[in-house]
Length: 100
Image 1 (cartoon, one colour):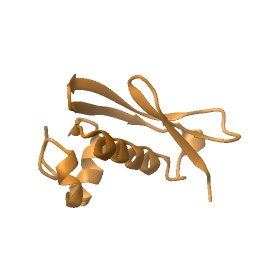
Image 2 (cartoon, helix red, strand yellow):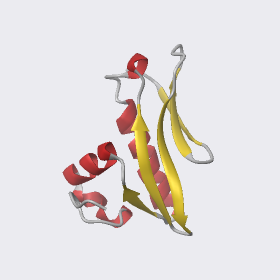
Image 3 (tube, one colour):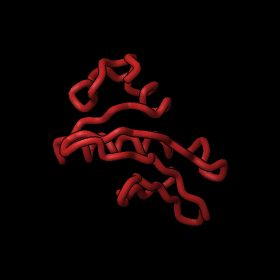
């Protein structure tokens, strides 16, 4: 199994895989004291098919739970995953499948 390391930087969540000279990200914008928008998910070809986007999303969701903020799902990937997982509704500003 691929070991994916995810960290949070100023305005993005970043995933790295040892031995791969690329990084994946979910970029976000702070929209208020307890709200961010997930703007874009990007995974380079060198990291494709390894569950990297999912690892980024899970990290973002855990961060939202731990730090008490909600997410506006502007990113198509995030919005699509949320539509499949209505149990995440407490972490989002919209209903599952609803466009922000």
